[in-house]
Length: 437
Image (cartoon, rainbow, N blue to C red; front, top):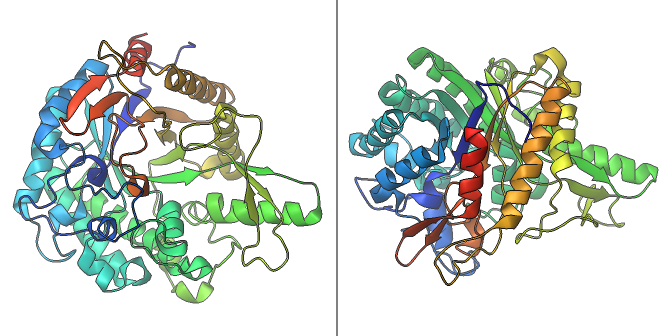
């Protein structure tokens, strides 16, 4: 494995609803995922995140796993419904107490706390009022950021405002396969703008309470054009504008691109200045490239997504394409130039069907190969001049994987859900040794 800078940030990531459980503890209110998971047919295995990995009660055990891994940072998310059970009003002190204990435990273990404020678990009362379709949610998000930073801002080392706003908009409001389950297709642009507006307002709130760096974590996917017609090229441009530029161009002061569904009437005077508040880090979540070609006649979409052949596949049937990460990082560098802040890869990982063997050990050579290829891709991008300063594996633990329930395992640590027994996989040892080297 090639060398990385001595101050390169090695980490792992999780999110609150996927691991915490304890959904009715210490005054936590319901989130849209509590509601969605209880609707018949929404979750593949009919499960909920009510217990998940029981991290709320086992955080000390999980912190010990982080210490054993040797990571310099742990990216977790704070559950908005723990801090503000209704999405408004004063902070719920008992809810914040948990994150106090977690942050202090991480610091004691020599691990930098990296806190994501919104990883999709919107308080249900805010969704009842319109969710991210409602401009007021952006203001509520800034108030929540202020309350959280007032309690934790002296110890959190990096704040991440939003996780993957493109995915939340598309799957939650466009296609309805994630909470809150709305199916608006391209009428969901207000969700994009109000999330970005909330990000900008939260940046200001965080700056007032904390001297730590501030970031956002976007999901990116390099577009692989399938076909060689003008229509195929137009389809690829449209998808790239929607997936890769809609949530980045305005962040970096370029305004919105001409993406499918873009509605300028949603944007008020001064909004773009708020959205473009300077950030210290751009979080990049990467899993795979996307194949795109021109749609069939009569399609409601301006592009068609097609499988990419010639790649190994994960249990999610996603193509394993490490070079796509190098390509993506280079594209961001070329596209935004000096406007691009330092990048940290805030999620990179894969799902495989891991199970203990007869001796109770969990071997996952496919995950090791996946991570090895992607770490090398990051090193290649750094060598080409891209300012990448960190890499976080998704995920520390096998967890509740949204609409897939407990059927997909991304962890470096195997979790036996009936007993909550944690078993580090061979990939855990591999990543530990990589960090040591």
